[in-house]
Amino acid sequence: MPFWHEDIRSWERRWQEVGLSPLPKVTLAPPDRLEDFTLNVFPLLKFYKGDGAALAKAVLDPLGAEIAAYDLVKGFLNVRVSLDFWRRFLTEVQEKADQGYTKIQVFQDKIAIFEYPSPNTNKPLHLGHLRNIALGQAVSALWERAGATVQRVNLYNDRGIHIAKSMVGWLRFFSPRTPQSERKKGDHFVGDCYVAFERAYKAEVEALVAQGVPEAEALTQAPLFQEAQEVLRRWEANDPEIHQLWKMMNDWVYEGFEETFQRLGVQFDRIYYESQTYTLGKAVIEEGLAKGIFERGEDGAVWVDLTDEGLGRKVLLRRDGTSVYITQDLGTADLRYRDFPDLTHSIYVIGNEQDHHMQSLVAILRHLQRPYASAIYHLSYGMVELPTGRMKTREGTVVDADDLLDEMRARALELMDEGVPPDLREKIAEAVGQAAIRFYLLRVEPKKNIVFDPAESIDLKGFTGPFLQYGYVRALRVREKAEMQGERIGPPPEIPSLTPEEGTLLRQLYGLPSFLEAAAVNYNPALIAHYGYELTRCYNEFYQKLPILRAEEPVRRFRLALSYAYEVAIQAVLEALHIPLVAYM
Image 1: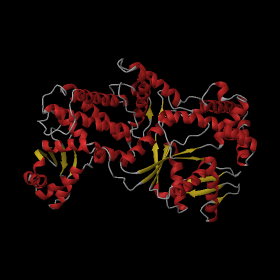
Image 2: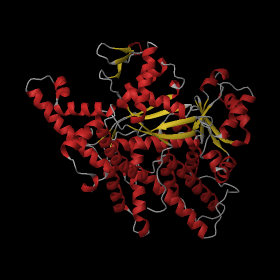
Image 3: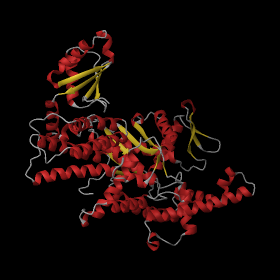
Image 4: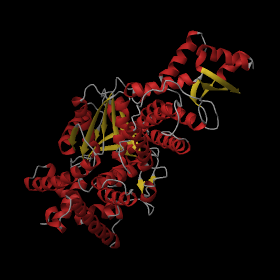
């Protein structure tokens, strides 16, 4: 991984000044090497006709005393830097942690809008939404750390056939009960209404199929579906009775969502509602019809032909004039651009089952010549499954976010050290439980599916969020004990000869800016999750094998500075992943 760090940029400038071309690519040395960095000089070999000494001299002379030793292996020049190089680095961490070590400027001129989690208002948030939220929070935090101006927005999908189904579900199976009468969170109560509808609807479809009706026809002829369609038509016709029911049920859901969002530390700069944007989408469709970009079929439905782009024909309005999802997405995209005319990136955090939908949205906006079409990026992610298989809302087999958060908090309480102050136990258990969930969902590349295992996610010695939290707490204790003994944590005036554990930890610490940049540029928090795990593993080995507070000077001061550098780095990692910091575990 190429380095962002200014020291390496300085090396590149010096190579350019002496006319070296192409420039060597600098990465951390492999773990099995004793050197610090590896310079890929393969492209330069042909200019030196196999003379390794001449090649090494040409590359290393501009770097002067910064290089203490080297070893050329074929096209790789492995170098060990001077102790003064590391002294300067630790000084920078002490004095400029927020001015280049943990914050970079690769996106300084960018204005990014992140949309997540965009839930439907017919069910509670579930495990899949937790992955959406974890990705949205982490990637937006990484972009902020990389210098971008970030706005976080949410779009409530608060209308449409699914919402109509939950309304019919309440009318048929729950009226006049309320969340208050049932002592349930509002979003959970409405979710029960939706599941009840789907189960009864499924039974109706099966009965029709048993009578010889083709399944495709049975799905639309079932009385409950017809009733939901009628509710949707009445809603779009502004029927006051239907709107009153719709508002009451949505308010129940919003209250429940907000409780979960507060628990997760989710905040938005702006909230959009599909019920307010779908009419804007209809105006966009009229514009497309007038320009000949869209077409109206004989049955009245409006289509766009994206066959030439491999996307087929896409319906934009149903034959009865009611909207589909892409109707409101077109309106929302226009509205968002009016709200944020200077945006350079519009990032939609949406599951990969909507890949085709998002490709179609961008293609349509290009046909409409919208200037922001090229700014749209779909942060697509895979499904979260259980060991028993895929979750299905309509069958009531989802894992509710609230239930999972409660379970993980309970698991954290069971693992907690007895020395944790009693008044902090619940708060820390909540933070550790959330760390377990977030890290497990972020440690996998977004595009891949995940099988979530609660027990594995909270292992304090495994590849987990609590493992990183524990490393942070350990470093915090070291600093607190040193300060209690009157020790001043500051840049070491000198660095003694390095042990293997110290050298390995220094190299890992030095790589932080590169991993932060790579994770942000690639929309991939898994890169920084893996980095944080490897960094903590190195710190634990350093901590366990070498005395810190019991070491003699100047070793003690150096090791305290090294421990503090880890504390700075792991705090940046945890914050980038939106994992809570804890003072005890």
